[in-house]
Image 1 (tube, rainbow, N blue to C red):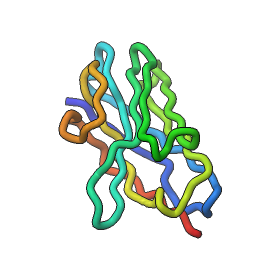
Image 2: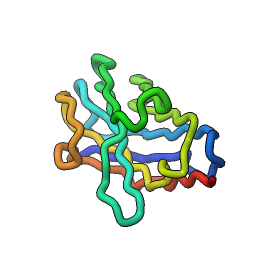
Image 3: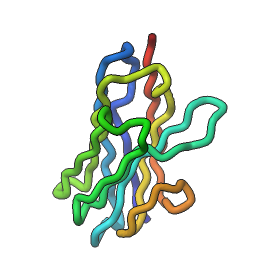
Image 4: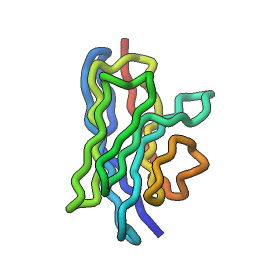
Length: 123
């Protein structure tokens, strides 16, 4: 089992920045992927970005490229999501997720999930 704990959500004005953190514990041996999804009210949970903690390879959704950046601290089994130039449409609950070493962008591929953290961007 892998446990994921997110932190860093909150309320920010449009154009502002926030940084989310996600710490993994439990069975975290070997290279694995950690990512972020988000779910706005009334919408499906959608992929945001993910990184392979072993290789450092990362991929992101087109909607956040150039604004969001994912980074890792392997010693802490922690990933960070730096969100810049935030827009009201970025408002959602952001979920951290984890899986094995193969990169994936679909919700179904991730067996482990955090509890979610709310990000609200006001206009």
